Length: 161
Length: 200
Image 1 (cartoon, chains in turn cyan, purple):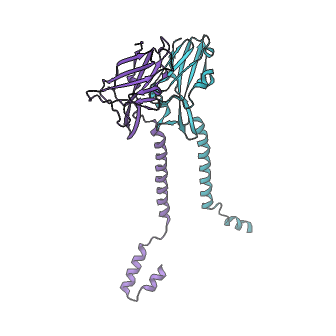
Image 2 (cartoon, each protein chain N blue to C red; image 1 turned 90 degrees about the vertical axis):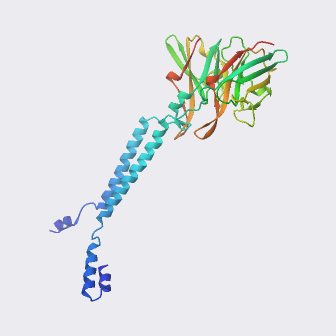
Image 3 (cartoon, rainbow over the protein chains, first blue to last red; image 1 turned 90 degrees about the horizontal axis):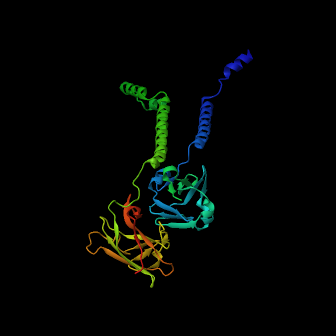
């Protein structure tokens, strides 16, 4: 009899507690989903207020290779932070940043600005390659600070050897 | 509230009836307010999400790129390369539709080199002023080499004593343009001109 009375008095969780629990649960689920989704989506890098992928269209540079020497001139208005050099030899290829090559020390620290030029001997790195492609690397800003972006594919310049 | 009104009410029957009538107009429960809070929260969340999505999406919208207007053209009217005195003199003419502020100048010291990469802007001795790695025709007037001017020619002289024999000169015109309400220094890479050098 007493037990029954006690049971009747217990009305379960109060509405305030349930609401608080619900809110906490939703926040936790959103947090987990956000962390999972962030890993899947590429972080947006911005340059001059535009997504850096769109800025690749505005890059205008010239590159030549002759007698082991590579020459690069930035004709456009987008600074080229670095370049990647794709060296193809008999079906295989390797991509190297200009900074990793022996001439990398001569590359300007801030990259090639408007009208900037670079020339250097990369014969030892190229060897018996039959194709060289130069890809510009741009630097932009993202939520986590400065970040580089390689303008690949159509933005590369193939140099005749 | 009811007690207060009761105190105020006088004994007059008419006034009492009026007071009773007004009491019925007062809300009995306040559950309606929570609905309003719900709507306010919903709208606030929607607006916040819209702002976040807009901030993210706007970077993907293509905007005007920084480039010179079509019809910008600089012509190398004459070149005098004195190998003995190691001087290079260039006369420019604006044969385009827009004013030109200056130029980038690169030379080549190897025969048959396709791309000139030696920047000689720092070797300017007369006819303009050095601005970074470029040469400006005038310090005070922007885009001073105007196509409307009848004497729209600019002459610049360089001391090239620190280089060997030069074979080629390449010129990229530059302009000062207002883009998105901001004054920008623009390189006109599309209007690049080159000239072979021969000793005078």
